[in-house]
Length: 450
Image (cartoon, rainbow, N blue to C red; front, side, top):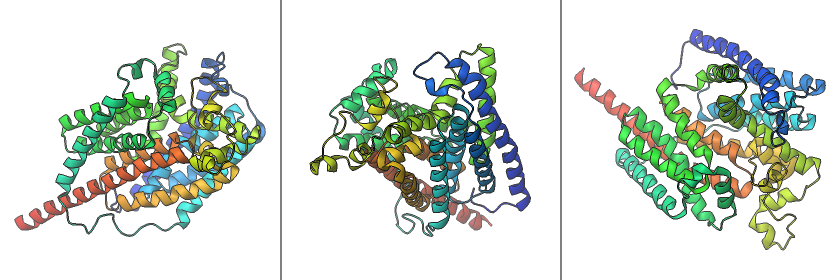
């Protein structure tokens, strides 16, 4: 993946990506106008999916989509891991989010904040230097033994926490009730951190063992991830567990994403035609939940904090316990996610997406602060993945990063999310070193035979 490819091949990738990007954007517009507005027309919960054309938002959003698409095409052959993470963010957040805001008239100011977030993110990615060294590159260690110990440790930790805090089959029967109970329970933040660690690492280990064809270990890791799901009914855990093996089977690469995204949208159209607008398959569980929900949720965070003037509440959330220690008053009885979610459903704690998380943490200023903080975190990921050659490991780890970033809410929760990612990053660095060591042995043996 890091090797230098001929210029003609890079141009083929770019031309193919441009075709599928146009198809992807066009299909998203058609889905929102002709499918979403029909399926969710009578639902108060999904009132944010009703088509409403606004000329000003369109005139702002279409050039921005062209700019994002140009950036994606130009960076499709980028070599650093963080470039691929931002590539993914463009494909599954910024492009669908912009299409959503234009199609559903979610607000011109909200659209401008999303554009501002993207500009700051791209500028920070360009200006903040990449690391030149590899994490643990000079440490002498038996990486095979370390990875086996890591795998065993993640499985044991998952089982131990699930035995104590898991909800068993109930987590599958009533997801939102279990999720609400978990959020309002008195589970210590350290326990939340502990089960976040294997939840982030296991999908990457699954990709690693699929590559090595150790399918029994893959099965054990899958069971461990399912047990983690039963603790708080986090669907993202199952999503990551499903997507990584799927990408392994089709041998997907980051460069295939424009094609895969347009294929998913086309499949969603065919599904709705075949099922007479049932919308319970790809539309419900992929297009809406993964592509549209981050922008949909961010719209309500924007309306709550900026539109309704709850400006002090985000400082209460971002400062966490420090707010109480300073003796400042509590403005609301529930968390920001619950307060915003109560506008739609009494049992929903609404996730935020990138712009929503920035607003929920620091208000409008968060749109300019959070992208820079994310890029600094991405540089740590670049350090861990230096010289990693396996495309599946890259893609699986990038998926974990994207899912965790899009599902985080405000600062205290982001700390727990990023702490789990920290350990996952260290694990990926070990996998990268193991891969390099294996390749070096193979090269040495071929030299000896020669």
